[in-house]
Image (cartoon, rainbow, N blue to C red; front, side, top):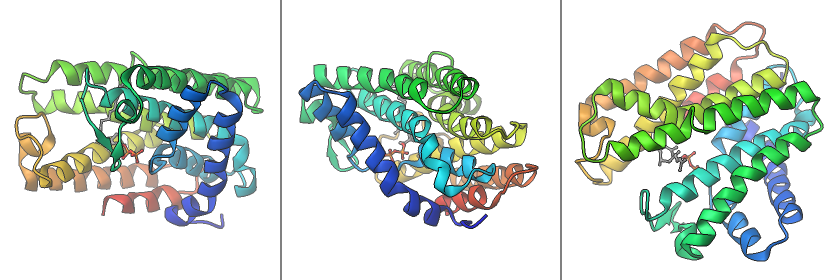
Length: 281
Ligand code: GRG
């Protein structure tokens, strides 16, 4: 293992991964309006957390750094699905957001119809990319199964519906955790589990636990940031339910749980996934 620091890993890999995303979308999508909206969304400043976590898991499972590009179709598919989910989440019928990552959302920059269709296109294209990957058929099938299970009605989409349903009622702690396990956590769990299974690392409960706790930590961190920026106090968020101090304690607890889980993983280089946890510091 040469790279042990997650940020170093990301910085080394990101230029070629971004180049892959851009050239592949440009090549695949010939309809100019759709292509422009898809490229706008994919290039508007996302941190690429999920594909980098997937590739870090692949690397930590023993695949050489120079061979990680063989996994770009799969990592790219995860980023396409993440991007589609944000475009649709921002629509007036859902979260009604005008700004994402400091820039106009896709429906504001273009229009609502293009935003819906760019989201549809990103979601569909994700599975095309996995199916055309050069990895063998059993790995592609495993990736499709995990991603469709966790991103669709058995995962992220169900969480989004729960979130919408909860708008005018107060959720309990357990309900809030369940909602975010699906809405935010399941795509992060898919990223780690796709990385492990497609790199022939036999999946264990430890890595799933690690990813689940990261998913929740991610959401609590986002809620704490929103709270500190004065966001709506009637929303179902961790700080509104627990208070800011208890939310910060819970965030630390989940990060510690994630650390303990990954440290138990066998036949796996733990450095990168441990280093990723610095994101929450
Ligand atoms: C529309 C089916 C459908 C699902 C939407 C994930 C999601 C479901 C909505 C996003 C809601 C949200 C802001 C959750 C907070 C945590 C989170 C997932 C933030 C966005 O992820 P980052 O920080 O985004 O990885 P970037 O901008 O870096 O890509």
